[in-house]
Each structure stands twice: as structure tokens, then as C-alpha cells.
Length: 235
Ligand code: GLP
Image (cartoon, rainbow, N blue to C red):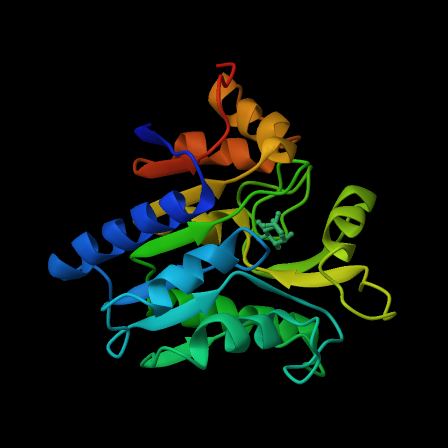
């Protein structure tokens, strides 16, 4: 395992680091396929990317996950989030997000995984759930998992409902890339901002690999950069 930890003072600095890493990868010709994440953590990151001179015109993007039942016109969908924060402002070659309103969800998962195998991820941006989930892989998910339908835990439903901006109830299920789909990325950048992520991040740094904390699967990856503003992390 090779893990680099970058400690920053504030979210904008984290965003700056992400931008610089992506630039470096692009200069090396290693940014053809980029994995993207959603959530509040990503908002300052995308803002910085939008205001940078980075071009994504030759980049194909894959998002990690999507709520079941929400389409791209629904303000709470990840498709809407990506459009609002990044895709409407930066041109990409192509963008893929799992289709949460697909008639046959299992088939959608198989299709998404097939696309991922055709376009291997060069870099994957990752956030982290308070319970240690990555993408929507909740505690207990097999590290061998590929794109699948996941039932969300109460912890995730509680944390993510704060991002829902109307009375619509948060869906109980989501489509998500699996842990092995995420680990297939050549390079992973995990961004953990704010004290509420301390517990989950410390589970990773502690080094015990367990399905109880999906983020610990990253221990099995050869190129992980963690960017965090959390100080005095216990290892
Ligand atoms: C959701 C996403 C995760 C993300 C997490 C963190 O659960 N599926 O990919 O890491 O939110 O969200 P936030 O950045 O809002 O804390």
C-alpha cells in the first residue's frame, strides 16, 4: 500500500491540491478517464476545477453512484448535482452516471460495469461517508463487489438528507459502483473535510482492513492520496 496524506487548512486548499494532481496527471497523458463523486465535499473542488484552465474536452467521466428513482431533472439526483456544479460549466468528452430510473436496475448495473471495463479509470475522486462508506458501498459490502443496487443505512440517510432541498423523502436505495470497481482506478484521491469525517478517516489510517468500514479497502490499493483538513489524526 502506498498512501500519501496531505493536510490542508481549508476546503479551498484541498481543491487546489486536487486541481494540481489532475493537471499533473493530464500533463503525463494519464487523465483520459476520470471518476467523479458527489456530496458537499465536492462543491469547492468542482468550483476550483471550473475556474481553472484545465480542459476536460478529451476526458470521459464516470460518476460513482445515483439514487434509485431520481432522474436528471430531480434537484436531489446526482445527475442534477453534476450538471449544476461541473458539467454545465466544463465540457467533457462524455459523461456517465448510473441511471437511477432505469426500468431494469440490475441490467443497468451490468451495463455500467461493462462501460467501466471498456474505459478503465485513470483517476478516481472519492469522498467518504461518516460510517466509512465509499461511493454508496455501505458497511458489510464485499470488497469484490461491482456496480450494484445498495440499500442505504440509517447513518447515510440521516447524513445525506441534509443535502435534500425539498420535502421529498430520501430514497432508501441507490446504484453504486462496487468496491472492486473503485479499486480498479489507477489512482485514487480521497477527500475528507470536517470533524464529522474524523472517525471514518481514522478507521482507514488505523490500518485494520475490515468490511465494517468500506474505506479500509483502500489499504489494498497502490496509489491513494488522502486530502484532509482534520488535524491530529490518530493512526
Ligand atoms: C454520499 C456519496 C458519497 C460521498 C458522501 C459524502 O453518500 N454517495 O460518494 O462520499 O455522500 O458526502 P458529503 O461530502 O456531503 O459529506
